[in-house]
Length: 393
Image 1 (spheres, helix red, strand yellow):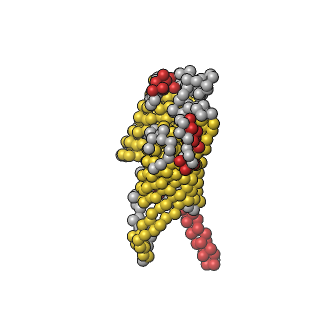
Image 2 (cartoon, rainbow, N blue to C red):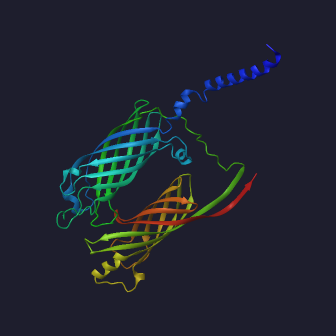
Image 3 (tube, rainbow, N blue to C red):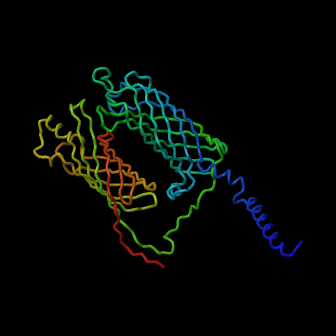
């Protein structure tokens, strides 16, 4: 063979061997290509529940009954793609469909619900997990209040309602593909006074279920270490966050007052971050509820000016952070307002999502002693005020 051909053959041989080595490498072997298909960590779960209606008001005792409920869920086991997943010890995300006949009561009918949820591990070993599941979605009740045909149903005033489920759950892993689950939960249906009457339905439940992983799970959990400072820097700088926003609420009170009313709500929350999960702080509220003017007139105590309808308040605030999504709770006391039927204390529950730079959208529920007052939707803006020093190495 001519000497001039040998370098060419050597290069061809080197390329062939390189391809063979790469194809046999663990980094991109067929098993790894197969592994890429299973990064969704899909879980399918079925639950059987049993519980009873809890009469939080004396008028609801005629609905007392025991009944079953059934759930079907599609879930995903997180594995650390986002920082907040690692901070919460890899929770389960999912969507559950619930059906219950509500004791086959002809006044209440049956209930259906579709609820997205997140399941936070509180204690975790290789085969056992104890956690807390929070579900929030939409529910449909086949029966509602009607002053002519269903006047005894003072619990629910509309077919469409918010559906909330709070569950403490234990999960025992039987094998790589099967997990036994059981829990105690509290199911709630309410429309947030979008249409009255709205006492709501509450049901404690116990459940047992089986979760199945149809495909092999992704065990490639990301780095669990969080650097204490930003790269190449020493940070002793802190910040205070200010959230300013407004919301518009709606109350359908035709069954009680004969009209529909709007509620205008403005707020400010001041937060300090205390961990990678939580912020605590103080808040201010100012609300104007048009229905209170009518209530005062019916009680022969009319308001002298619009300022007497306004209800300022101060509250303690807490935020649970999930990336761009925050769950905020406020416990407050009113500082004024002439109409005092609901008492001096109030609670707020709010989902807040930052969608563009520092702008956020939110939906809030205003509550008085466990009874929903109204649901509001709005937008707001947040900004930080920094203090301390930051030096770059």
